[in-house]
Image (cartoon, rainbow, N blue to C red; front, side, top):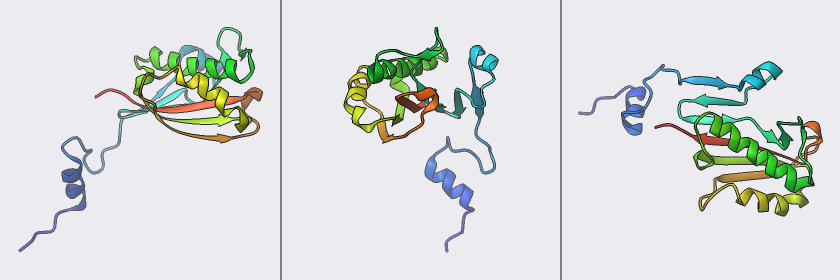
Length: 153
């Protein structure tokens, strides 16, 4: 004779002992630098949900000048990727923690130039990635990149 087990128990058994108990909410932390807090942006730079870090999209803004980096798509791509790297480092993480990126390009024809820069920010292992053309990126940017990272244990 078989006993029916509650679905939460079955899910917990399937996922292992680290699975959240039924009704438990994940730990959520909204992350902003002091500069972002002072700017009073209507979004968080990143949100940590348990061990998954969701980064807001980064454009090629030079934090020193507050303007888009010079050099067209290559310059903006380099700065956007550096902004991602710096944001991760500020919170104790690295580019190797990234598992997924979404890339928005003002002109999809600039994909090869973006790829040339992008490759330089990862060593040997590339995150999953999606890309699409999008008109009207913030501040007239040529590129915006958002990422998801897995951090902690």
